[in-house]
Amino acid sequence: MQIQSDEELRALWQGQPASIVQFTAEQLRGRAAQFERQTRRRYRRDQASFAVAAILFGGAMIAIDGALMRLGSALLLLWAVYGIWGLHRYARALAVPTDASVQTCVAFHRRQLERQRDVVRGWPLGVGLAMPGIVLVAIAGSLGPRHAPWSMTIGVIGIVAFVYLAMLIYGQVLAGRWQQEIDALEANRNTAA
Image 1: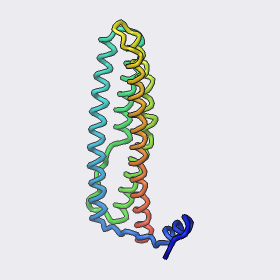
Image 2: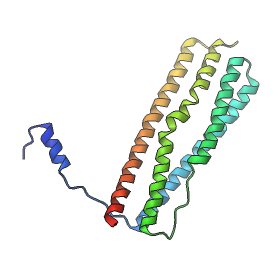
Image 3: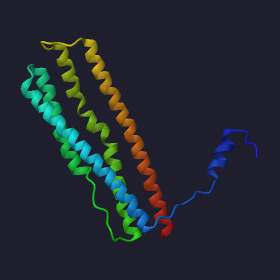
Image 4: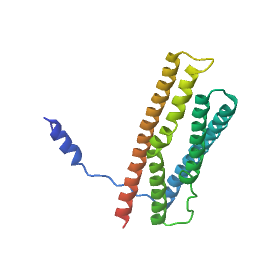
């Protein structure tokens, strides 16, 4: 069969029967346990990062001269404390039910995937809250007594903006993957019912 246009290719592709994967309770428990291990690992890493940031910016607030630098450090300290609280409240991993039915495992894993997806979708706001502090610290570095050249300040702000953009893209990729798994669980639930 020769395809003449993009519309024919799209129609052929969309006309394929969708394969639905059936999960056993053991497979679901295994997938949920693996997801929770990954979540726990990411949670610990993020908690440690926020704790180090809080210590560094708390110390900078006390040790460094200059009102602008102290204000930027105070904003970053508040951001780190807010990040620790937000992770504790929203991003924790929960224990996987060990003797649950397939329906219960599907519901649990789906809730966890949705919860983590929503946390990752909230990254732009969480990371964006650090931006004013970062900009103030960078500008204060150029205005202070041992001032850095403005090109360095602009470079630092550019690097931070690039990392922020990369995190947004990575978060969207993660959220998309988790949404696909949520959709597969939903399809599994619908066929099992």
